[in-house]
Image 1: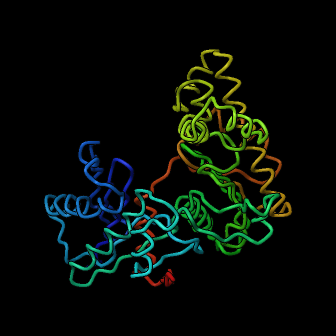
Image 2: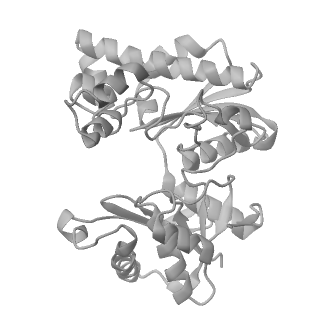
Length: 357
């Protein structure tokens, strides 16, 4: 019988778990953590025993035979910049996740919890795959315009890579032979240039640059930002919230719900129409920029993430990019499936397991 794969995806207020046998999902659960539950912990890393206990309780309640679990895939956290792939969780990674070497983030718990559960089981091993800090940049892409500010690779690596690999597989092609532009469009928007299996350039989708999104500002006029920082009107935290959380559509329309904006635009709301088109315009510009990174040699453009469900937005975007390459729309994202399918690639020997150093 095919052994089980456990996928663990910790978020800021949730922990999602799923169990797969081969390609079949046999259990999924999203566990919600209240503010009161979490406020007792000083750091995110200190939550791992609390979250692990709940995970084990849920698996027991679902009558999952723990010793049938062979692969545990944790959502990759803010580790050191690494190449795309599957990494076995080791002591070096545990150390970096515990101290938050690139910052504290709930996804740091993925590897920690996976490792501890694996240690309790008969033959399970713990892995992470394609964390947000996947870095396959060429040196050219790191240059920003000033040596004090190097461009960094922080993006939706798990979903971008999974969509790109699935696209290649569906069309009986090799991902490592393709040039693709992948646009992940959700709460944040990242547009990556995938050349022969590597993301050689992508906008920094967390708090860096690129298109604005439902709650992030993307690239802003730098002179005006500097003036705002030193105007005395805003605290550092207020400025940061302008960039992430209260930026983008949220700042213009007081909502971060792209579907609500689409509905308002359909009903003739002129500001909603303008902002929706402006976001499509900015995503199109980023896709155009990535086409130049690939020197115009683009096999396909892949559009994914929650915003890709919105046909009016996709239509606006497609009008501006259809001359570049054929467009494929893969709406939504399934991080649990992406984690599990990478675990299956380990089981079948399709994926090489890499060592984190």
